[in-house]
Amino acid sequence: MDQALQTMISNMPEKTGKSLAEWKQLLGKRQFAKHSEAVNFLKKEHGVTHGFANTIVTLSKDTGDSPDDLVSNQYKGKENLFPIYEKIHSVVSQLGPDVTITPKKTSVSFIRKKQFALITPATKTRADLGLKLVGKPLTDRLENSGPFGAMCTHRVRLEDANQVDEELIAWLKEAYEKAI
Picture 1 (tube, one colour):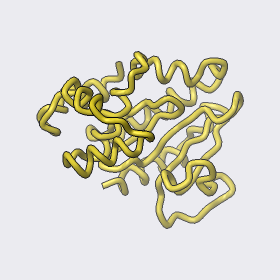
Picture 2 (spheres, helix red, strand yellow):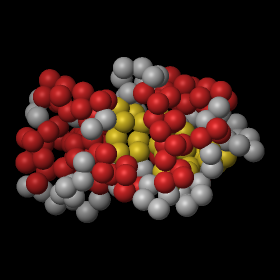
Picture 3 (cartoon, helix red, strand yellow):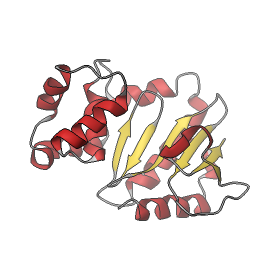
Picture 4 (cartoon, one colour):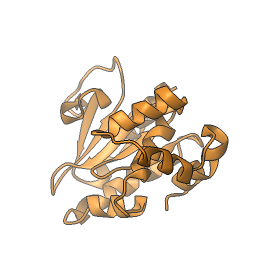
């Protein structure tokens, strides 16, 4: 299991008032049509921050998949893109101790107090990195968010780990710094 995720789970009782098992039990008593409905329920009814709420809901789904399994499943048949994910993960992990990395079924979210980036294997030859950079102008490389909608303001298409260069790292740092 990712160390940041394990730390978050360990800190959950202190930060949210309940353990992951207790949150799973609470969510198991309710039916939610969408992931976002369960997240909003935890935020509004229980005062849980978005990062914890998203993680709780993700880990409460009865898939039996661990966070590592979720990431592995995303890159099945797209193994050539996994080095891109690994490089992004490495960069984001070093941005600060308050980064939460939350694997989901089709993407991995990077959260500070708010989500500031996410990565998904978009096709067999391309991963998409979404960034939350409100007010930042679009460029040829830093595109409109596209399929990410309101979750991100921009998208960068990545076909090779070498594209995780200084410019991209600066954008990740900027998004992290704004996610307060």
